[in-house]
Length: 177
Image (cartoon, rainbow, N blue to C red; front, top):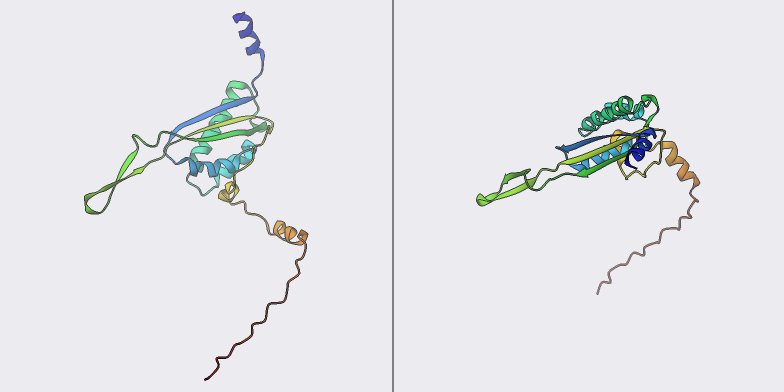
């Protein structure tokens, strides 16, 4: 039974390739902003966005995306042109025990600063796959800002509100006694 099951699993072609980055010395919150911007995009488009992003967190994610694309090409015989970022996960690593730093305070006291670590996983595959919803603010990191046309269209589509006349104030004079 085990030999038969092994042959059946090998015959199935893999449609995804994975790459992991563990113990990245960066806070997960900073990495998630960049990850949200490339989720669901093609690998070519994501690499261009990461290459020209002015965010410090873009460099390790770009390197990891290149690794995932190379894994797909070499290990699973996938075409690099057809790859999409199917999933990207950013999780917190161990950030409490061995990464503490001291910050001197008044009267000889010390405060601890926790240095956060992160684990990042990228899954690439042929075809776009299921696109996950982006978190708010991800696209703003890369510089994709809502266009003026969308704002104008939204303003034109909204029904015009009637403005009521401002209330007149009655000036009260102090009575002289």
